[in-house]
Image: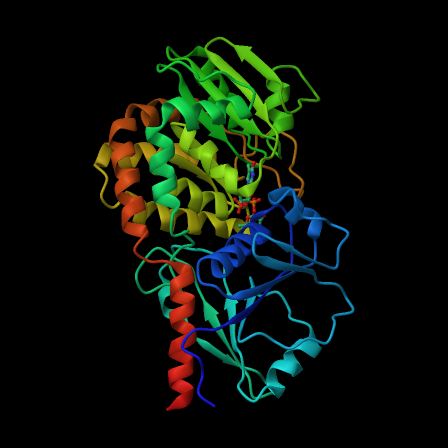
Length: 409
Ligand code: TRH
């Protein structure tokens, strides 16, 4: 049987470990494959509650539902007997149900089975991208697929129309931007206000940064979506129960707490701000597409291995920056990602029991970062254009064809 050049069907499996990154990536990829490439996509997810945060229309009680062109299915212990899709994506090495694996092996034409890995800028990624991993007992092969920032990797998730939508938003101050600010219950800030979005994990560097903003000469509006950094932000203003809609002021700093917004609208928040603080994996990529200076709080891992990942990205990202701008970025990103080795931490540990190293340097480092904003702005736009050339969804579909051709020969 001749394989179709493009798959018609796709199953994506997502095991939600914590936070929103796993489901964030899967939900975005599922929508893109369905809506831009016409695949019939089933997204199997074991925690519908997390999906419902990103897609408020989703009903966490349903076994199966159609949302945004995707069939969303609850991945429960009793996995139903289903016909496997032609393209099977196992996200972040989650373990597929045994019955499903056997059903894949029983197909006359085996599905193309891909393990979509976490994003990293480390050198070894290029060598591991597309590597096969034969099943120990069945005639099935799984392939590693690594997102990344260089042409020899799987690239990044980017919707076809994202830049056009972003540019339309940015050039439409009267309607789209006004509508955005209204939707979060605020009037459009004055032109001299520095607008910052702050999506972050607990972070010992926050206090020093808030001090720098409060004591600075420029008014700062900081928009904080509900999430892990919120209790700390509240404490800064002596409020131990900050909530969406809350507004706090100290000196030149105004903080506004936002409700967690639908994933498709999160981009607008990034576009509406001058500088964005992001975390994890998916928001980190979205900040790059926004074409604005950003600061990444990397997801903390054991033995500080994440700091290597941070460094690898910094090296790549800073390659074309001037020395002073590159130092400003590195200095502030390091201050925002304390390595946890400093012993005088008085800050509480986070949800994972990890203690963030106490940092007093973020306020100081911010001054250099913000001084480099002009260069960082144009660099961010250039970087976004460059990265857009390597599109993950298209690469996945090409890879499907590549495997089909290889099998046919
Ligand atoms: O939530 P994250 O920290 O996710 C993760 C996970 O912890 C994962 O296990 C880990 O391995 C990975 O990081 C590296 O950050 P991330 O990836 O940015 O995901 C957040 C998602 O939430 C992203 O899709 C954007 C979305 N979002 C909204 O939809 N609305 C919002 O208001 C905000 C702030 C975010």
